[in-house]
Length: 140
Image 1 (cartoon, rainbow, N blue to C red):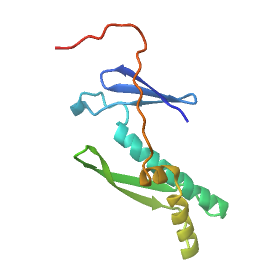
Image 2 (spheres, rainbow, N blue to C red; image 1 turned 90 degrees about the vertical axis):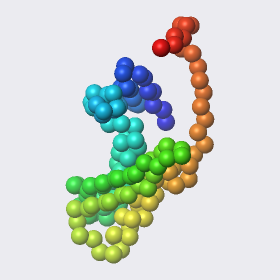
Image 3 (cartoon, helix red, strand yellow; image 1 turned 135 degrees about the vertical axis):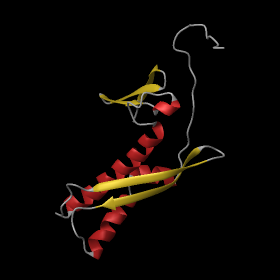
Image 4 (cartoon, rainbow, N blue to C red; image 1 turned 120 degrees about the horizontal axis):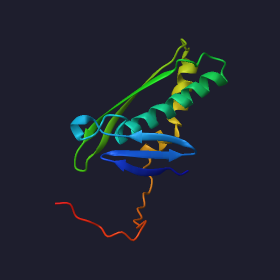
Protein backbone atom coordinates (compact mmCIF):
# COMPACT_ATOMS: atom_id res chain seq x y z
CA UNK A 1 0.00 0.00 0.00
CA UNK A 2 1.17 3.52 -0.72
CA UNK A 3 -0.23 7.04 -0.65
CA UNK A 4 1.56 10.23 -1.66
CA UNK A 5 0.79 13.42 0.28
CA UNK A 6 1.80 16.75 -1.26
CA UNK A 7 1.51 20.23 0.22
CA UNK A 8 -0.75 22.45 -1.90
CA UNK A 9 -0.30 25.62 0.14
CA UNK A 10 -1.58 27.10 3.39
CA UNK A 11 -2.80 24.05 5.35
CA UNK A 12 -4.09 22.04 2.39
CA UNK A 13 -2.60 18.74 1.28
CA UNK A 14 -3.40 16.50 -1.67
CA UNK A 15 -3.40 12.76 -1.06
CA UNK A 16 -3.08 10.40 -4.02
CA UNK A 17 -3.52 6.63 -4.12
CA UNK A 18 -4.23 4.40 -7.12
CA UNK A 19 -5.44 7.36 -9.19
CA UNK A 20 -7.77 8.67 -6.47
CA UNK A 21 -7.34 12.11 -4.91
CA UNK A 22 -8.41 13.51 -1.54
CA UNK A 23 -7.67 17.02 -0.31
CA UNK A 24 -7.28 17.67 3.40
CA UNK A 25 -7.75 21.09 4.91
CA UNK A 26 -8.40 22.75 8.23
CA UNK A 27 -11.42 24.70 9.43
CA UNK A 28 -11.23 28.47 8.96
CA UNK A 29 -10.49 28.96 12.67
CA UNK A 30 -7.31 26.86 12.18
CA UNK A 31 -6.16 28.92 9.17
CA UNK A 32 -7.75 26.74 6.50
CA UNK A 33 -10.43 27.17 3.87
CA UNK A 34 -12.56 24.26 5.17
CA UNK A 35 -12.47 22.60 1.73
CA UNK A 36 -11.71 19.10 2.97
CA UNK A 37 -11.68 16.87 6.00
CA UNK A 38 -8.92 17.19 8.56
CA UNK A 39 -6.47 14.31 9.05
CA UNK A 40 -8.20 13.22 12.29
CA UNK A 41 -11.54 13.19 10.46
CA UNK A 42 -9.94 11.02 7.77
CA UNK A 43 -8.80 8.64 10.51
CA UNK A 44 -12.39 8.35 11.74
CA UNK A 45 -13.58 8.01 8.13
CA UNK A 46 -11.08 5.22 7.52
CA UNK A 47 -12.21 3.34 10.62
CA UNK A 48 -15.89 3.89 9.82
CA UNK A 49 -15.69 2.93 6.17
CA UNK A 50 -13.71 -0.19 7.06
CA UNK A 51 -16.32 -1.19 9.67
CA UNK A 52 -19.13 -0.47 7.18
CA UNK A 53 -17.41 -2.57 4.51
CA UNK A 54 -17.08 -5.58 6.83
CA UNK A 55 -20.68 -5.21 8.09
CA UNK A 56 -22.10 -4.91 4.56
CA UNK A 57 -19.94 -7.79 3.34
CA UNK A 58 -21.33 -10.04 6.09
CA UNK A 59 -24.91 -8.99 5.31
CA UNK A 60 -24.49 -9.62 1.56
CA UNK A 61 -22.86 -13.00 2.18
CA UNK A 62 -25.94 -14.03 4.16
CA UNK A 63 -28.41 -12.58 1.62
CA UNK A 64 -29.51 -9.85 4.01
CA UNK A 65 -30.17 -6.23 3.07
CA UNK A 66 -26.93 -4.26 3.18
CA UNK A 67 -27.67 -1.11 1.18
CA UNK A 68 -28.04 1.81 3.54
CA UNK A 69 -25.77 0.33 6.20
CA UNK A 70 -24.46 3.30 8.12
CA UNK A 71 -21.61 3.70 10.58
CA UNK A 72 -21.15 6.73 12.81
CA UNK A 73 -17.72 7.19 14.39
CA UNK A 74 -17.02 9.69 17.12
CA UNK A 75 -13.86 10.22 19.10
CA UNK A 76 -12.34 12.48 21.68
CA UNK A 77 -8.97 14.18 21.66
CA UNK A 78 -6.43 13.42 24.35
CA UNK A 79 -3.27 15.21 25.43
CA UNK A 80 0.26 14.27 26.47
CA UNK A 81 0.83 13.29 23.75
CA UNK A 82 -1.82 14.90 21.52
CA UNK A 83 -3.83 12.13 19.87
CA UNK A 84 -7.28 10.86 18.95
CA UNK A 85 -8.68 8.75 21.77
CA UNK A 86 -11.84 6.93 22.88
CA UNK A 87 -13.40 5.96 19.57
CA UNK A 88 -17.10 5.09 19.55
CA UNK A 89 -18.49 3.19 16.56
CA UNK A 90 -22.25 2.85 16.02
CA UNK A 91 -23.28 0.45 13.25
CA UNK A 92 -26.80 0.91 11.88
CA UNK A 93 -28.13 -1.81 9.58
CA UNK A 94 -31.17 -1.65 7.29
CA UNK A 95 -32.49 -5.06 8.36
CA UNK A 96 -33.78 -6.46 11.63
CA UNK A 97 -31.34 -9.20 12.55
CA UNK A 98 -31.72 -12.21 14.78
CA UNK A 99 -29.09 -12.74 17.46
CA UNK A 100 -26.99 -15.04 15.25
CA UNK A 101 -26.66 -12.46 12.46
CA UNK A 102 -26.21 -9.55 14.87
CA UNK A 103 -23.28 -11.42 16.44
CA UNK A 104 -22.02 -12.26 12.95
CA UNK A 105 -21.96 -8.59 12.00
CA UNK A 106 -20.21 -7.74 15.27
CA UNK A 107 -17.57 -10.41 14.66
CA UNK A 108 -17.09 -9.19 11.08
CA UNK A 109 -16.67 -5.56 12.14
CA UNK A 110 -14.11 -6.57 14.76
CA UNK A 111 -12.02 -8.12 11.96
CA UNK A 112 -11.77 -4.74 10.20
CA UNK A 113 -8.16 -4.06 9.16
CA UNK A 114 -8.19 -0.50 10.51
CA UNK A 115 -9.73 -1.56 13.82
CA UNK A 116 -7.09 -4.27 14.20
CA UNK A 117 -4.33 -1.79 13.33
CA UNK A 118 -5.51 0.61 16.04
CA UNK A 119 -5.88 -2.24 18.55
CA UNK A 120 -2.36 -3.50 17.81
CA UNK A 121 -0.29 -0.39 17.02
CA UNK A 122 2.10 -0.87 14.12
CA UNK A 123 5.75 0.04 13.97
CA UNK A 124 6.06 3.50 12.37
CA UNK A 125 9.33 4.44 10.75
CA UNK A 126 10.20 7.95 9.52
CA UNK A 127 12.62 8.91 6.77
CA UNK A 128 13.52 12.50 5.86
CA UNK A 129 14.89 13.35 2.41
CA UNK A 130 15.53 16.47 0.32
CA UNK A 131 13.78 16.65 -3.05
CA UNK A 132 15.87 19.43 -4.59
CA UNK A 133 18.98 21.34 -3.70
CA UNK A 134 17.08 24.44 -2.63
CA UNK A 135 18.35 26.45 0.34
CA UNK A 136 16.01 26.35 3.29
CA UNK A 137 14.67 29.70 4.40
CA UNK A 138 13.60 30.75 7.82
CA UNK A 139 10.47 32.81 8.23
CA UNK A 140 10.58 35.56 10.81
